[in-house]
Amino acid sequence: MRGIRGRTGLLYVIVGGMLAAVVAGVVVWFSAGRAQQHAANLDQLERACAGLLPREQLRGFVTGNSAGVLEEYGTMLDPGQESRALLDCTLSWGAGRWEPEALVQVRVEALIATQVAAADAGYRSIGDFPMPLPPGARGSTGADDRVNGSEVSASLQVECPRGLPGRSRPSERFQVSVELPSKADSEYDVPASDHLVAARTAVGVANWVIDRQNCGREPITTDASPRPVEGATPTKLCAWMDPAELEFAEEEWEFSGDGTYDQRVGSCVGRIAGYGAPPGMPVVGVTAESWSGAFARGAYERHAYAGTAPGRRAPSPTTPAGSVVIKDSGIPPTLVLWAESVCDRGPSYHRIAVTPELGFGDKKEVVVDGHVRKRFSTDARAALDRYLAAADGWPQRSRCHDTKILGEVEQWLR
Image (cartoon, rainbow, N blue to C red; front, side, top):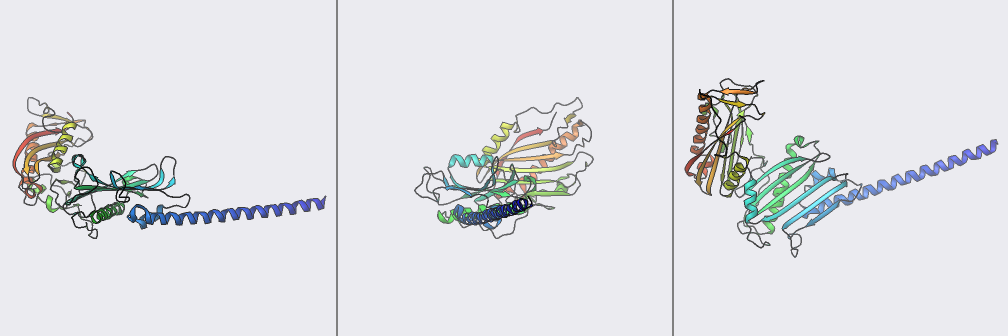
C-alpha cells in the first residue's frame, strides 16, 4: 500500500507539473498574441484617417485584446467614389457592452448652400476654440459623456475662395468634425489640454483639405498660444463692457467673449465674480450678441420659436402702483432688448441681455417697484447704445447703420 501511495503521489506531481507547464505556455502564448495585436493596432493608428490622427495622444487608448476596427471612405481617399464626405473615418478599439471602449471619428464634408444656412442658424460664437482663427474660419470644442468615460470634440468650418469640387452644387465652405476619447471620468472633467488636442487635430485636417483641394487660402496656423477669452478684463472687441461706466454692480467682474472678429457673429459676456446679493437690485450680468446675414435669420427664428423674441408674450402685469412681481424659477431673471441694423454682411440683429440681482434668498417671489423696473430698461438701452458706438465693438467693425429698436423681452417667471 505504501508503494502504491508513493507512485500515486509521484503521478500527481508529474501531472501537476505538466498542467503548470501547459498553463505557463498558454499565458506566454496569450501574452505574445496580445503584444503582437497591440503592435498591429499601433501600426493601424499610424496609417488611419490619412495619417491625420494625434497618434501620441491616442496610443494610451490602443489595446491588444482585439483588432482595431477601421472604417474609412470619402472622395479624398477614393476619388472615383460617390460620397457626400470628402473624408469619413472611424477607428475604434475594444468591444464594450453598449459601445466601443474607445472611439475616434473624423469627418470632412463640403457644405452646399442649404447646409451652410442650417449651420449658420445653429451656430453661436462663444469664443471656445482654444487657438486664434483667421477670417473665414470659425470653430468650437465641446465634451460629452460616454457609457464609460468621456469624449472631446472639435468643429471647424472653413471658407474656400476657389470652391470645392465633387458636389452637384457649388460649395465654398467645408466642415471638419473631430471626436476623440478622453480619460476624464465625465464631460465636466475633460481638461483644457484635451480640448486643445481636438482643436489642433481639426486644424490639421482642415489644412490637409486646403492643400489637397487647392482651396485658395493660406493654411491655418497652429503654433500660436491659446488666445485668452476669459479674464478680469474684456477682450478688445468687448472693451465697451465697462460696469463702472454703465453704473452696474460695484463688484469684481469677469468677462468672456470673442478674441477675433467674425463678420457673421459676435459675442461678449460679463458677470460679477462672486455669488453675493448686492443691495438695490443692480445689474450683475450682461450679454451682447450680434448675428448678420443667414446667421441673423437663423438666430431670430430660433428665439421666435422659443418665445424669446419681441412680441411673443405680453409684458408683466403691474400693480396700481406700477410694481411687478417676479417669481423665483431657479434661473436668473433677465431683461432682453433687441435691435435690428443693416451691416456689411446684410440685415443684422443685436441682442442685449441684462441680469439684475433680485436677492430671492428663501423667498419664492420678489416685488420690483415700478421705478426699479424702468431702470432695468434704462440699463439695457445704455448697454446697447454703448455697444453700438464702441469703435472696436462688433457693430462698428461691421459698419452697422439704420439701427431700429425692436422691443424688450422679459425672461422671467411671473
